[in-house]
Amino acid sequence: MADPQRILKKILADGYDATALADTGESLDLLVDTLRDIIRCRRQAQWLAEHCGFDPLLTPARFHSLLDIDAINYSEEVDRNLDVTRHSLKDTRQANDPVTVANLNAVLREMFRELSSLFQLREKEYPRLLLRENISGDLVERAESSVHRLRGLDLKGVGFLFTGFWARGIEKEFERGFPKATRVHPLRKSMDAVQAELGFYHRCLEVNIRWAATGLDLFRVIREDTLAQVVENLSTLGNGLWNVVYNGMQMREALAVAGIDFARAETLLSEEIVPLHNR
Image 1 (cartoon, rainbow, N blue to C red):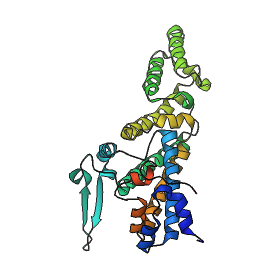
Image 2 (image 1 turned 90 degrees about the horizontal axis):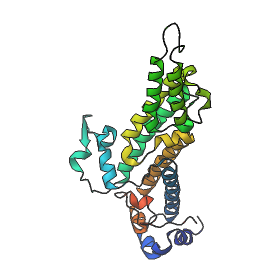
Image 3 (image 1 turned 120 degrees about the vertical axis):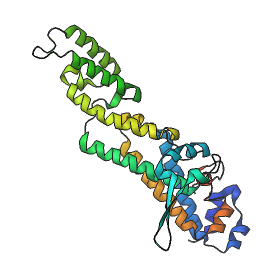
Image 4 (image 1 turned 135 degrees about the vertical axis):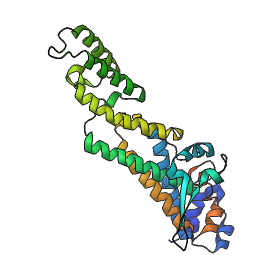
């Protein structure tokens, strides 16, 4: 790199300390690349916050509430005898302890795994979601109730011959909840398709409840048809943070001078704590 000092001065702005950086003796070229990676990670984090409600800049309290998820709470250590010891963060972490980059990576890894599995399920078994444009968590139970009540009016041998009046009332109620789902109206002709689709939404409800502490709004993602992009951005952010940590092992002092601390993930993601300029 021709002049990393000049680039660093632009990226770090008021936080630039030429003497302190030079005194570390570490690669300023690598520091420039790593700070640019952090800027890219911030863009990914902002996209996730804006498009699915999940803000990777987790507060300590929000992260602590996620420790009910085993994949986040537990880590494993293998000793030289190949014995595996499990460690629980619940046993060692206080609710107000800072969220580390390792903590954040555990969250991103598990959320990516779960949403990626959900995306694959949708692609394989639910390629056409007829209720998608109107669906919300509150409407899942209401839609299920409509199908159940309508089936109760479908009399063996005569169908809705004597129950048509009540059936139409249920269908009108269902239509008010799903006005854009024109392909499923009237409901009596699409009960099987709707009931099958509700199986997917029940899975979405489970995932939404599991990640409620993060602010994730999965039904918004489904309505806007952005699940693929959310999964991709989670993967990109996770890989970006891993690259930052990997490179950071070679320049701990320089990153510290720049204000980056892996023991506090907020220093990587918060523009207020460590301002970085995309220059």
